[in-house]
Image (tube, rainbow, N blue to C red):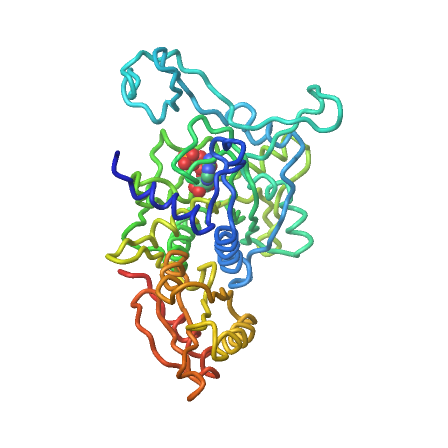
Length: 436
Ligand code: ATP
């Protein structure tokens, strides 16, 4: 049997520990769709929460938005997606495998050496119909990016929040792309979530804002515990730039399947606002009271995938040691922060453990567990990535102390019950990713 790759093992761990399941599994599954289980859904929320807070709470120049997935079809015409959001694909005449041209090198099928068909352009937008009668007038698209919902609301947000430039609008939401070759687990799927921020600036400052934002976004990945050595920038060459972009960087991560994109940071110029303005006849301009100038703002966009970030968190945290598999997730995003156990199910230990769990629940996500050997319970939390475990034992009754175990070092210290909150807080504040 072929040796299991790290990705195979991670996919198995995700299923075993309730991170990610194949969608519609009991029906045989559906290609490239995934469901986030008890741990995965919490990790996803924690990632989104960290991003949202860094964008909207930690600063005073960015507003939030939650636009609808279905939009007027004219939006996608004006944005260039109806005509230009395509990937060129080829089929192998022999084995029938389908490829994105971007993923092929040379003229022959990499699987069987067969000949390719002529390249065809394939629009990645999912179509649907609004209302009971299917026809061209009811045609709608599932949004392929969240950004357009922000652009068409530029004036609404600017006026209602009484914003002066520069300011940003942040949004988290689902996007859909009928990808030709989805794969690599949750790396490329047809339904995914994006965390996008559009920063509206004076045109002559867009260049420096782009540089500023790419540094800030890189720092954010460190703040959620991703190892610096696994991240790098990739600047788009002229043939890689999207139709709307003047300059762009990707933040790339070294996945087990190679260096690939995690987030895109683009100078989108005035492309989007100008096109929406042209299509609707509505002015999407900004009047600068100080200088008396009127202009269409430039946009610097930071566009990250929630699912890809989650994959990066898992891959980056995964370690196989002699006796255990451990996820070194940052305590800031780990789905469970503290495991609470009674050593045995007697002598009042479960009651004390329940009391501790109830008190700590106000501040942390807690996992109470009293089944099986204590070693097995620790191993399970290590695989889930729970940074701290508290165990009530026979000494607890004598001196009101419990053990507090650190996931990464496996060291245990005795802590007074009424100092637990403080000890966990201190440990969380001092946590650093290995090598950072
Ligand atoms: P790729 O070249 O990998 O297809 P892209 O350049 O088309 O990505 P963008 O349009 O810049 O991606 O989207 C911004 C971010 O949204 C990406 O960096 C990625 O994190 C996420 N993303 C895009 N497409 C997908 C997808 N099919 N599945 C999961 N995440 C995606």
